[in-house]
Amino acid sequence: MIALRSVLFNIAFYLANAIQMIFWTPIFFFLPRQFAWHIPRLWAKSLLWVQHVCIGSRYEFRGLENIPKDRPFIVAAKHQSNWETYTGLLFLDDPSYILKRELMFVPLFGWYMAKMKVVAINRKRGSQALADMTAKAHVQYREGRKIIIYPEGTRTAAGAEPHYKYGITHLYHELDANILPVAVNSGLFWPRKSFLLYPGTIVMEFLPVIEPGLSKKEFAAELENRIETATANLIAEAAASDNPPPLARKFAAASG
Image (cartoon, rainbow, N blue to C red; front, top):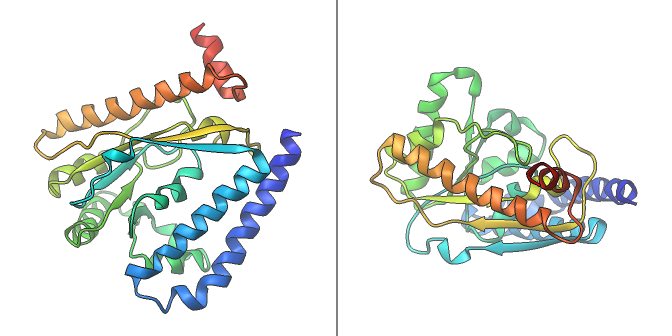
């Protein structure tokens, strides 16, 4: 049953993406960006509905009171699956993503990203990529926009050893930025490099903001500690549920 539901979801997921990219194009590209971003938010809601219907996924969002209302900030989110890449749109108005430049060349999708004025990074440029990212992010941040970055640079398996990159620490220091850490357990239910998805409650938790003023070393340690501690707690919580997904059962057995 899991395999069949996963097949149905994958078909519906990619069809929903393709159909909506085409359907919204005449409207999205003629609206000012400040209004156009509402379309990706609707899009995100539809994908959550598709996953709920096909897989039986449920969603819980914690710490919404920690999202600043009166200042720009950078979201530093744990990245375990595709799920969190669009789910944040439900709570963040007109965000700008930091993403790899290759995604800008995906037909239609890349055009949408360009319209949203994302920060596209050419990682092949080495140290220059960091300078480019900082300059572009600085412009967006000073405009009062929310910026979303995944500190590890790529998706990681739930429970895997963390490897945080320097980029987020550099942005914190250079932009004198407020950082909103985010923990998830999505990788338990939508595992990295897996076709199968599992039912259960996916949790996204917004943690207290890290304000400017820490040294680079202090900030890097604080950010990783907050995200990893909260993520580990979410994994343990899922493992203790009535019907945990396979990865959660694995962690429960290892800790037991």
